[in-house]
Image 1 (cartoon, rainbow, N blue to C red):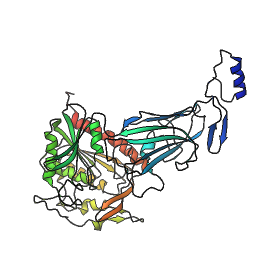
Image 2: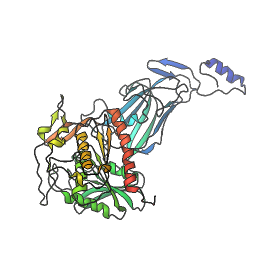
Image 3: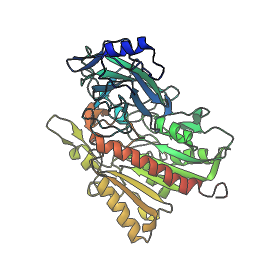
Image 4: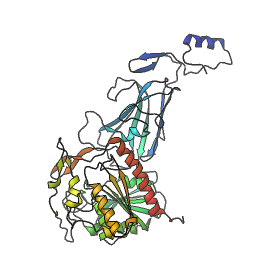
Length: 470
């Protein structure tokens, strides 16, 4: 192969000689060095190419990003940008040096700076952060799961940041990240007082299922359930606070045990659900509800998944008459950092929870996986996991408990490649406050990727194992 150090004059002479044994590649060109990088002056070189495969994928799937037809050993920046559904710009970028053959492969190559460093094939996705000048306190969440996140990935000349728009864009590609796979059904549920959204996988079923509970942020969060359905599980995302179709003030829990029992039975009775193969997953306050449903309502889930949540509550659920009240004010347990950001971690310390509010863990009769972010600044997850483990051991049920513990991970452990917000604005009566969630970018991303694989494996073992005669 003819090397790039051969002069253009020599190449032209070779072409004019028309020697049949010589093949001149279009990629040969004269290089002109500029500030921050290398650019091409010859029309002989094939244009740089950036590819992403697959360009359409579920959010928990890795994609391969590669660059070709670049100068060897050349500094370049790969930049990812996307707009949230609220119109806010999120971006990530990484600095690379092209290989000797003029290629770049994010699955193999190491970033030397930017939003992350090292070999991180999906760093451009989990590394997304609000662009400079964005509103404060943002958290990236998908509201409409029937549309994708659309990511613009570009290859820039030199080592730059995305805000340095003077840098030349050499190539670009657009990718789509979906929570709903083709064929997944989304069904609004307003039945017997239950408010939620049911997601069903493609096909007639019956399917194993999950009841999906989020935290006190309220509303109806659908994206995890949509992803479960994309992986073959029916999933009911359940609202229990902060939704207009629920009774009473939206800033209080106005439902009780009977509501959660009805939701479980609604899922169980669905003709496309395996009635004896239903699990429950909860994040934050959803953990308390998950444990309570499994021990105090008479239902029999097949397994539980708990992510960074407490075994008790400072808030009573609604009683039979629809009345709610607090056990005690939790504000005395709030702590603040130097910037005035609030942490609720001490609220859920087992020592600060009344015995009346604590779930009777010894009644558990199904396997439970408890996921701990060791940098959780919103819940005392380590202490709650310890208490659950100790209680089950004392009850002779230690075989039911599995702990997944992640150093450097925060409170909001979500599906893989979701960008982490260490802080964000969150509604705290009577106003919104900047709330501390915790989590450092790289270890939190690693925790989400590992936890998701193990969540799906746990569900496979406890909900699908033997379902098809395995």
